[in-house]
Length: 239
Ligand SMILES: Nc1ncnc2c1ncn2[C@@H]1O[C@H](COP(=O)(O)OP(=O)(O)O)[C@@H](O)[C@H]1O
Ligand SMILES: [Mg+2]
Image 1 (cartoon, rainbow, N blue to C red):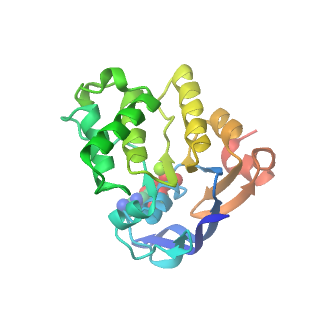
Image 2: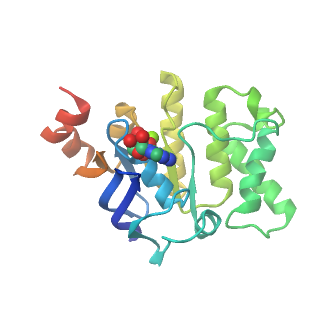
């Protein structure tokens, strides 16, 4: 079942086209990887989906609802959550409070505080932050700050999760743990669109990969298809 669809999606910054007439789709239950060189337009595409930036041409639909033109909080309530390439957490409040904010503003806002508290505790357990839930977020290591962002996104109760370079800057062990966590999130019924440069992760957990270059999709297919595509090897993967 089609969950997210973009048609002719375009974004200019001044004279520069960052995302150019892009068509894409994500099916419910998939893990889709979005790859491509730096500056390809990957983060811009996430910003258009989540309405952090406005789309200039084209339309994006989520569960058959046109979301282009909507506000970020409306899109969040519909069931799309995201993380950021450079972590954006609230540094001076606790891990728990960071995640609670997601619960308060997300899909199930309006739920009683006991229920929200219980759900937040469960999410902290799920991402492995229970032991440090009272620590100010700024005192965490990078991997744990990234887990806070994932937990906050999950707390909004999304159906689609956008992950922007979640594995960047992590060591081998942390990457393996993160791959396992992403797979568990999908197994819990959440569809995933992830930007990633860590090829090992992309190739082993994605069902499908989309390759962006200069704002255009240059290849799309299974990890096998994409990793053997001449064009992709030429512009991105190298020999
Ligand atoms: N807010 C912005 N204002 C101006 N230019 C931007 C902005 N965001 C991104 N760009 C430009 O758009 C292009 C695509 O950037 P980005 O989407 O961040 O690429 P990626 O995430 O694939 O590395 C780059 O040339 C970048 O400099
Ligand atoms: Mg980016």
